[in-house]
Image (tube, rainbow, N blue to C red):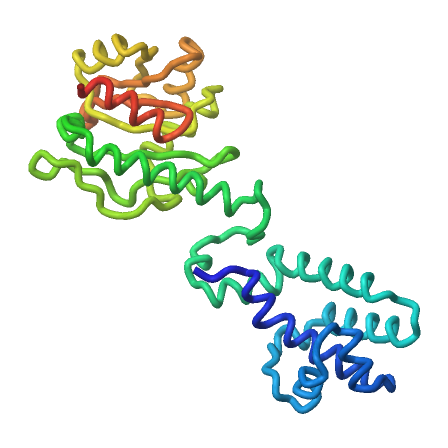
Length: 299
């Protein structure tokens, strides 16, 4: 694990201080004065001056960094800028470069797992897409682990396999829905999960969830299990509201009609058709809530 703050300390600060020390010396400041202005030792300034500090070329050639170094050097030399202002201006630039910008890209290169995320990277944003995405992926991961350890769940896995999915808050396509790559399968009476949750890997269950959301459901997660009358009875006994849809019709149209007729539905189901296996789709606010419903009917 590598934090973006480490990138600031290891890459940005040595580069920035080297550049600023050079600009200040060019403006006639002594080594002692430069050390005082930067808040570092004279030996550190000497290392900057003699090229003994490694610098990051991407940072050193960035126009915004170059421009700020020049403004601060000029301001400090002329007495028009205080050291506090110089610090604040630098901090502002650092925060900017951390938000889906230069430092974020350097961080991504230094810590490859971040590269798996496709959106704009702002590691510090508490409401940012990265944090929300990872929370959804984690939610699915926890749910899957619970299913693996739920006695009796394997018997509810349909022939086509199950999938547990959860959507991002504003998801409108399957790329915004996390699920299990492939399917959860019943292997010798045990639920077997082929891999870690990913986005965009569940076409069918994700489509049902998105159709339900598009019709007005508040559900963010779904799990498909095998259908029979006994399963529906058990789900209703557990307090679930169920609604049937027509497997032969377009998914969006069929699900929309079921949702409109029963807006607080917890379980959608279809009883099958030619070449179509009958399936139940358990809906809920998140993956854990969906799994808890299924756990109730396996006890």
